[in-house]
Amino acid sequence: MVIFTDPERDHQVMALYTHDTTSTVWAGLGYERREIPENRDISRLGRDCYVVWGRDGELLDVVERVNHIRTE
Image (cartoon, rainbow, N blue to C red; front, top):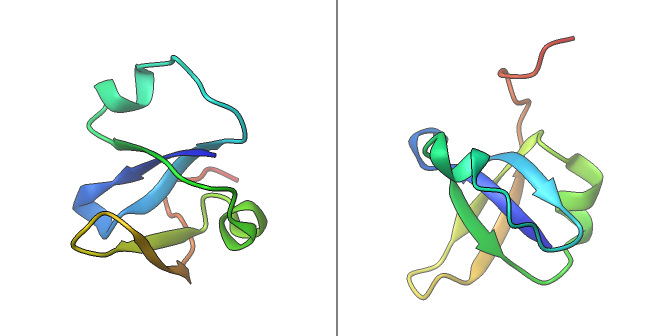
């Protein structure tokens, strides 16, 4: 799984892909790209969560939070 998070908003998930992507659009917007093992919580919540990283870059937690960037 590949996710792009916003470092300015506690690593809110901004985009996610189930397969690798060569797209640089999200990184070009200032979001951080991470390749992580498949995660059920992120898959279920999509962009409505943020992630907590450990010092070693390990995913420690997924926290539900509405992504206010979304347009309805």
